[in-house]
Each structure stands twice: as C-alpha cells, then as structure tokens.
Length: 331
Image (spheres, rainbow, N blue to C red):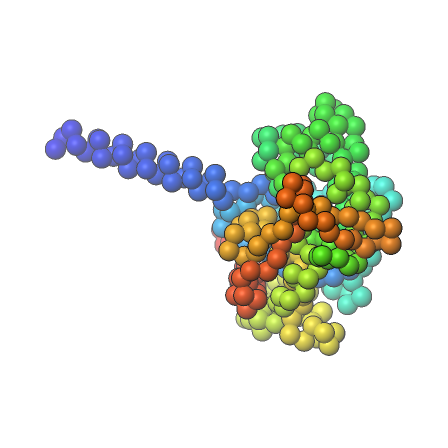
C-alpha cells in the first residue's frame, strides 16, 4: 500500500496538468478588440460578451482600441473595462485622419456622467498603432486574434507602420509573425453596402488586399437577424453600464422594439468559439468597389471566409444574450 499511494498521486497530478494544458490550449484565446463604439451600441454588447469570456477563462483581453475618434468613445470603453474589473486594459485611438461619430441616443454622455473612468477623452488615449505594436511584439508567434467591429482605420495604419523601438519588423511582418487571424464584422454577402467598410473604404480595401493571413467576415446579414437586449433591460441587474446603454437606446427606435441587431457580438463569438456548430463558411475573396460597397468571389484557394447562419436564430440569440448579461466577478 505504501508504494501505491505515491504512484496514484503522481497519476492524479499528471492528469490534472494535462487537463489544465488542454483547457489553456483550446480555450485561452488572446484578443485585441477594435471597435467604433458610438454610432451603434451593439459594440457595448460585444465588449460585455468579451469580458464574460475573459472571466470564464476562454479569452484573454490584451487591449481595447477604438477606430472612432469621437472624444467620448475611449472613456466609454474604459468605463466598461472598469465595470468588469479591468481598468488597466490599454485603450488606443487613431492619431491619423479618421471617422468621428457619436450616438444619437446620447448614452455615452450618460455613462461618462455616472460611472468611474480614468480615460477622460479619446484624444488622451495613446496611438492605436503604438498599442498594437507594443502588444504584438511581446506575444508568442501566431497567438493573437484581432477582432474588428468598426472601421479598418487602425489596421491599415498598423500594416503601414515601420520598424521602431518596439519591434524591428514593419507592420505587415509583425502581423504575419504574431497574429493568428483577423475576425471582422464587415461587409454584406454576397454583395451590398455595409457601414463599417463604407465609412473608411480606403482603409478597408487596403487591409483586405494586404492582410498576410486569414480573415473571417461576419456580414451585415448575420447580425441583422439576431435581436438582443430586451431580456437584459428587463432583468434585475443593477448599476450596469451595459444595461444602461440598452435601456436608454432600445425605447428610442421602433426598429429596436424586439431588441437591437447584434452584428458585433457575432464577431466576438467567432473569435472565441470558432464557427463550428454556429455557422457554415464560404471561402473566397472580398472585393471593395469604388462606391464603398463590396462583392464576393468564391474561390477555394481564397484567403477570406464569410460565415453563413447554421444554428437556429433563437438559439444563437439566447447564447449571445446570456453572455451579454454577464456581471462582474466578485472578488
């Protein structure tokens, strides 16, 4: 008996270590979240979803950057990060020309007035390219997933960036070395005009042509079928900036009476869980037209994929909203 106990203990310890490694290897996704948070508010639901994934151990949030230059965007991102117990998360913003848009429902003003934050203005945030380069240079090769749910401004600037004190690699080389994939809420498939691409079509075209790896698109037609937020605002959750945004915004628009369309949440879902069980995919190449619209070319050798709905809409709606309703983990 004396010789069996150590052997059993060793086996148990080894099995525990193996399970831990499997969990980390399969679920610990390193994510940089790039958002235009403001013109619409599904970004807020997507960021809440992402924090839920971080609290569950499925994801690690490396940074949250804005592609929208409006002064209240970075403070609102910082408010949500702080609410979920991550006030230290880097928040970057474009320092080049770019889009500046706020929410007509005025929820950013309400959040800034009510909730604690240390970033006072988007203008005070560091350059998004600096944030990208600093983080990517310190991460293992092929380990980072970038999720864009706004304009492609920052990504184009990153690809064009030059070697610096952070990395001897230029932007394209740095992305090729460090980034596993890009997941983008952008485009309409098989064709159409979509807001994120249209608002900075020059950057969009550059990124889609020059990106050295795989891009997965969740198009307008996917999130437009998924309505979330009503269950959230009818819940007993209190003192939540996420709930406040939906509580303020949903009653102001007749088209939102059943909930807000959930474009950006689908991109986070794909980044964390992949597509299996949720979506089918089509491989090919996106084409950006001169008017800011896009079309699609099927190609089995193409470097792009766009998703097609597979899971029934009520099921994926509940899956997403469950995670949007996540509350901060008590310490």
